[in-house]
Amino acid sequence: KNEVEQSPQNLTAQEGEFITINCSYSVGISALHWLQQHPGGGIVSLFMLSSGKKKHGRLIATINIQEKHSSLHITASHPRDSAVYICAAHLSNYGGSQGNLIFGKGTKLSVKP
Amino acid sequence: DTGVSQDPRHKITKRGQNVTFRCDPISEHNRLYWYRQTLGQGPEFLTYFQNEAQLEKSRLLSDRFSAERPKGSFSTLEIQRTEQGDSAMYLCASSTRTGTRDEQFFGPGTRLTVL
Picture 1 (cartoon, rainbow over the protein chains, first blue to last red):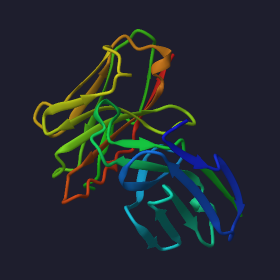
Picture 2 (picture 1 turned 135 degrees about the vertical axis):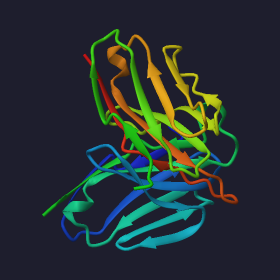
Picture 3 (picture 1 turned 60 degrees about the horizontal axis):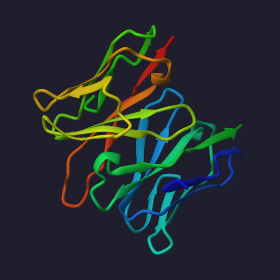
Picture 4 (picture 1 turned 45 degrees about the vertical axis):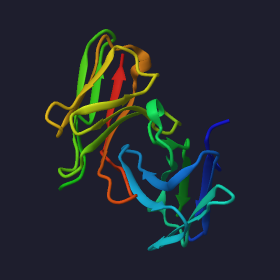
């Protein structure tokens, strides 16, 4: 079992739909990142959160530390939101040879016009 | 632009050749990371520098891989005697610790194809 699990792996939505991507983790964390990766490959950091909720435009990220679960929501989705969304757990203890950021496999989102 | 940059963006090579990638981090960032990402997977950690010191290497990193950060600024990742299994996206990230916050900023990546 991976230390960071995302669901769903693939998601197709119609433009305008409300989208939720889930992330569960089994390690102790100091923060959780949500990242966006477009087909060209570059990764953009969307949120880094350690508690509660953050909002940026149409994107909302929430985290429940007790349940070790985070969600990324996209309101009024648009085709330009099509990308891979990756959650990454920033370990609270020193990661050593595994690094201090453990990534999920990503959720591939496709928003149809 | 003051973000993380990587060069080249794409590299096609033949099996057995050596390749070298460069990463220029955000200028005030003292921490630099290399990751590898294969298709359909999240990035996996390769190595980490704090200033010029290489502090961690993944156990997955074979001795064909070597990384340097000679002056604590840019870094290079070299792969010797490339194999087809080395084909992947190689990502660089940089960060600086501010209080308890240590957010990594990623570069555009170098996509390696080994024929």
